[in-house]
Image 1 (cartoon, rainbow, N blue to C red):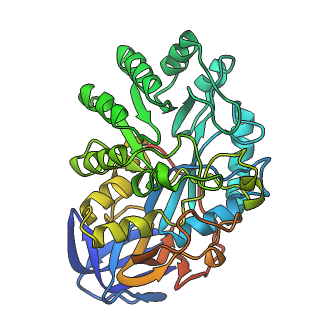
Image 2: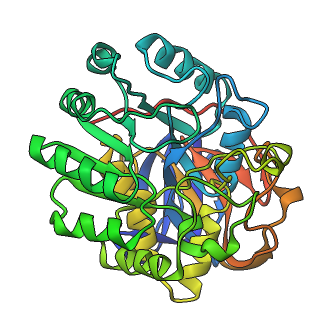
Length: 395
């Protein structure tokens, strides 16, 4: 099957160029001014053709917590948000701490997901052998602060052993724990990825290290909300911080200290949130629109968006043939209408939990079509194909 994306402005090497993108057998075959005969055509006139976004931090809740989300509904939400690849976290029920559970989770995603997928592997003081044996994973996740799933590790010797056994470790490590984790990883010469940086102190720790083998992620909720927005529904771990911290995140994003924007998509039902006892908010569906609106408001640039949401996640986690619009790369793309203005509405979301902390926000700039492995899976507000995503390959 072939697809021709015509008449759009294509994001190539930091610039928007008027080109057509010809896709064949799931790959970008040609980027050209010519129009090539194809089985299907997609008119991108007055729109931007971007690499499909990669979300390096989602919790799709499968297995064990699928009343909140599963790979089907989570992937629908991802596609609607211009995301063509997600990397799922291990704190499910049971937590993904063994290679057997990794295989089982991979099979579930392959049956249900309409976007491509990868996994972060879980860690404990007892699963070092499984960490060494695990193949085809993006990273090993260490929780140094409490979060959903009770995977907390506080023993520094165990943390050191996990880092030694891993190619790259991702950390839920807040404030002083972030510095502690960074120092251990640096002493071992290992790659360190800080999830959901939210404090000015954490940004300072990353800068002090000189950025060698150190990567930092920020979430939209920490970029756009502060502790003043917090209530029993809008509460997560780490919690929302001060406006000083929020501004420091924007500065770090724009100067390149922040490498990625991960949604930390953590859906719970509104009934669960009403108890005030669960933490996390959904975000995979609104991540791209929020950042496109920020581009329109000159808070950041399209180039920075492409780096943090497409290029850098592919590079950091070594995702093969993803993150860029290049001939020979996977045909994972999103079509953007920078002029489209509409509100986030709970009743229009695809996520199973059915709500967003950004409900009612009016945003300008939205994905209008998402292409995964050469097939259109989302167009004009609807999931148009149930084509299955694939597990990512690593370089």
